[in-house]
Length: 100
Image 1 (cartoon, helix red, strand yellow):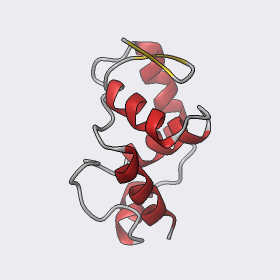
Image 2 (image 1 turned 180 degrees about the vertical axis):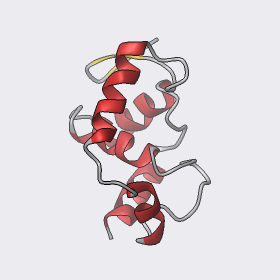
Image 3 (image 1 turned 135 degrees about the vertical axis):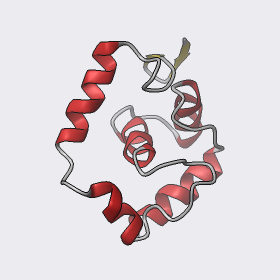
Image 4 (image 1 turned 180 degrees about the horizontal axis):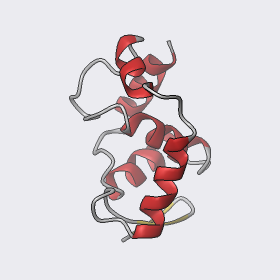
């Protein structure tokens, strides 16, 4: 575990505790049906270089916005949580591109 921003974080969804995995599943249930395909169609997710799948985008956004973290801290927490290993600049570019 790594201490960052506000709380300790664990690895990816395969290794996270059942309660955290359940929390992520609950959050995903609020997203519209087919949101992953729409992310691809609308250009929010175009390639899987540093972010492997569309599911990582809302997780990154939640870490950044809800956690109140800087981009650098968001990148650190995402890496520690197994979401993605990317720089704060890469995160900025990915989030900026996703909003268009």
